[in-house]
Image (tube, rainbow, N blue to C red; front, side, top):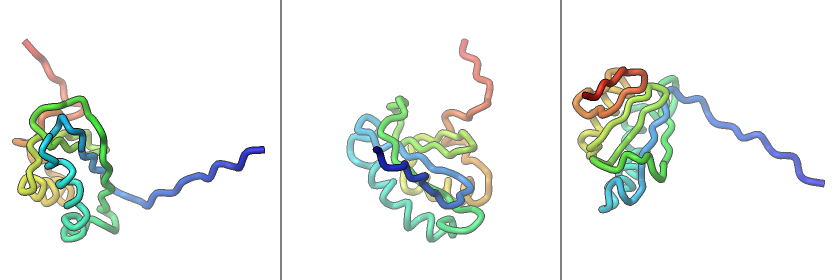
Length: 117
């Protein structure tokens, strides 16, 4: 007889930050370093607890392998490229804390209609 499967629990969060750490995104390890820095950055911004808590996760590949590091903010569906440490600070301050995406770093927005000619 098999053991019962235990239902997991996750603390409440407002946004989920997904960071591609795949080798094709940034071969020099910049994506992993960015992910590793997020704990301290989110804590410093007051986004590690409370109503605006941001959960973070590593993703092995988004299949968008240029312009990395690549970060996606959910449930907003906002995709960022060239997420340097300085650009991450802007995303944290403007988007994650104040709800205003950093438009010049956005390369895709879920729900936006795109036409190619």
